Amino acid sequence: MESQSVPGASHVLRDFVLELMEREGAAVEKINPLGVEFIAPMALSQALGVPEEGRLGFGWELPQHAQRVSFESDWLQRLGTVLGQRGRRLRRVLNYAGAAPSLPERQAERALALHNAVFRLLRVTPAWTRYLLLTFRYAAVSDEKREGVVVLGFNLSNGSPLDDLLAPMLAEVGRLETETNPDAEPDDAPPFLPAGQLARLCSAGLSMRIRKRLAPFLLSLERRLERDLARVYEYYGDLRRESLSRMAKQPAEKDREQLKLVAIGQEYQAKVADLQQQYALRIEADWVQTLELVVPVQRFELVLLRRKGERRFHLDWNPMARRLEPPLCEATFTAESGRMMCDDALHLVSLAAHGPCPYCGKPYCRACHPLNCPKCHLSAQAD
Image (cartoon, rainbow, N blue to C red; front, side, top):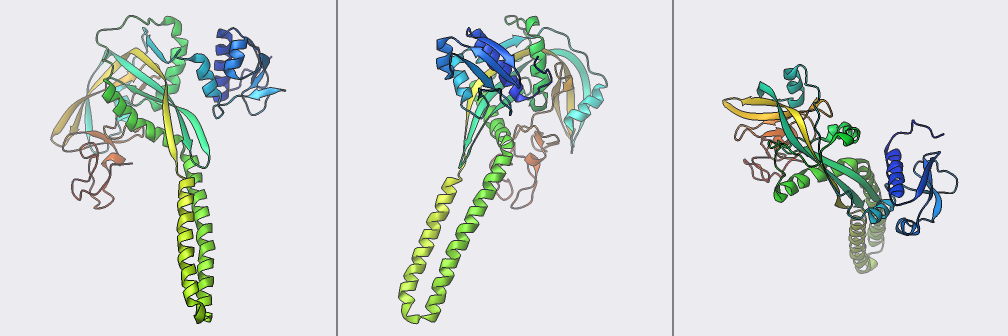
């Protein structure tokens, strides 16, 4: 019998492939270690590029005679061929009552983490909100290739990013699937975002999260480029030193050696350009799926206070994750904690988005000034 303690992405991928093959008419059975044995109809075997009967393996150790399936291989394209447009959009209205939060002021203090402002909690009331969970597949191509999947989630009532809440939310959606009503929707649920606003949120949040996933790969890329540049510099530096030495020892060869020095410099620049092109990084992301959830929440209505300014604001208590959601950074859509309020427009932004200008050192709000520092006009927007 198969072990029940196998966790992780390989486990999820194995179960997904098994269910998909069963829906397409295949006879499928789980086998150890982390694999499946199947008999598939001809149409399915052709679409997946597998024989009509065989084995698939999803872990580091494969069952005997099994073909490996992973996120890094071309299996996502194969599965997409079988799925077509099915499952690309899913909407659920979850009609259930989650537990009310205890100690609401303490919960708000943890979620807001204000560094230069204070808040006052006005009330906690029942409300409805709409969550949008967008799944993207990305590919980073340089001298090597990395692929993966990232989920971008936010609350449409206030833009709260859901990074740390996605796992419990998706687990709860799976558990509550039979209790959902896909048609009914409360009148006070926030509307769906216009296409332009949705595109801006995705553009702001997706690149940051993909690069965070790719951080080890990017670091390795930089190290390899620096290593190869150092080797090229050392090689052509030796050639240049040898040529200069010959010029000093044999003045009659000066003209020839000067031409050689020019050729060495040109060849060095060409090699550097080749390396920069070789290690140049191209990242592409394609939308895979949208999950829309309409959910009852407990709404924390707050007043944010900064000097003489005040601003009404709200955060939602997420009943699926049983946590108060973090506030949106109105400049970068980052999930990192800690928020500052600007004096001019009372924007709520991350610490980096209210940090000092790298040129003049003056702190400023990147939501108010997304392109340039208002003092020296030289700074790009925050990382």
